[in-house]
Length: 615
Ligand code: AGP
Image 1 (cartoon, rainbow, N blue to C red):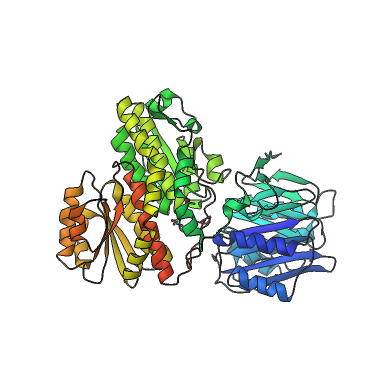
Image 2: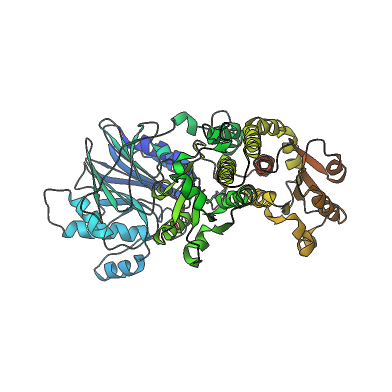
């Protein structure tokens, strides 16, 4: 949600900033801009629209200089426009600032600044912050430390809300200041150069060494050195980490879209999720990162899973897995609700927060609320070093590799697989026998090859997508473990095709949804040969009796489904526990090919951003 890239070094800043913004475009893409400092002062370019529009402008009027800040925006305050695009400048026009987050008290700060003679040209909260820092800058005396750093610290002490910022000032041409609270910011350390970025994918081409800044950190950078101070503590510590992937992992390669590439990466992603985590000997899962002793694992008598969007759907599948395999009661809650709901939790409740990015504001809020109440919180994250990963008491990394497509795909199936591992582990601490445990391990280990097999049906799925792509709405049905998959299938379709879609537990059809069935409303029915197969057949018949077209996801060789449904996508024979991973894949492909048939911008759907770092 908004992306920041800043550079200070010996090279020309503009090309590095534009390249970094291109890599962060998934975080927001309604407008972008940059400010570059050189011997003649501060120079700005801003443009509404995609990064491409800014690039075109930069080609006509290039900015030269070795220090620059840049931003790609996902609008919060003020419509997408040139005037609301970042960077914003202060009253003197000498300071420029880019910002990711929301300044909650911007109205009162703005009123005060207006009463002191400031005038504003945009509708944004960020411009207020730029003026506030600039105001402190002009009032502060020169000193032995950077005046810009001191101005940033003084301004941020007045601010309520969230921010990741990068700031430059014409009067301190060799200094770049960054700060964060609630929005991610990473410092990249090169040789004779430094970077700031919202996420490492923007800078991985130039350095593998980074510092993941903490909330309330302020970093002051010159070409050869940096200093991290804290708004709340006397001194701030930092750790230099290595980025855990190469630039090539974040490239599209020969695929037309990141989403398709990431769908096809799932055999590998699942392999990464299970590598070294299954013990045949003990017939259990080995998840050392949980930081729980056997006694603590044994003592858990309730689990709460929270997250947003796709991550929440993975949690819903996780609920079924843990309850059926380990017999521990599980509750799943929207992170955005949990953080304000003040729900009673049992003392021995273990909380899982699920997040691909590890930066989702609502999920982070839920994590902090649960920890504040004294609960043990474990994270299931993909981004190493992300805020959620760092603030959790322990957890499980997905190791799915960078996910750039706004629509989550491989992170979802990795999350579901990790829940299967957790269910196995908790189950083996309780009643699950070694032979049952071994059976689950065997089933999990089959997943990569089974996914490959499903991917082999891509052409068939593409044809089905073309047949139904003009529908105005679609219904997704599944029961038990497949209900979460139905919800996820519907979300995927909505996100990238803009077709109205909803997911239901199949038996709910007769309780109202059946009124929506007609010949123009396709139903996507997940009905593999599982424990509720027969029940599903009756529901399938009820849809067909009302002339509703049905695309079924069925177990290969299921002639009953074949004889009822209009189109069938085949799933390999698998256990109830691993089927949810398998049934996700055709739904992702169905959404993808429906979107491409409709000429949608698959990797950057309208109004969305990959990482939602505001409430
Ligand atoms: C999924 O396709 C969506 N982009 C969205 O629902 C996403 O899953 C949600 O915002 C949570 O993101 P996270 O996993 O990074 O926390």
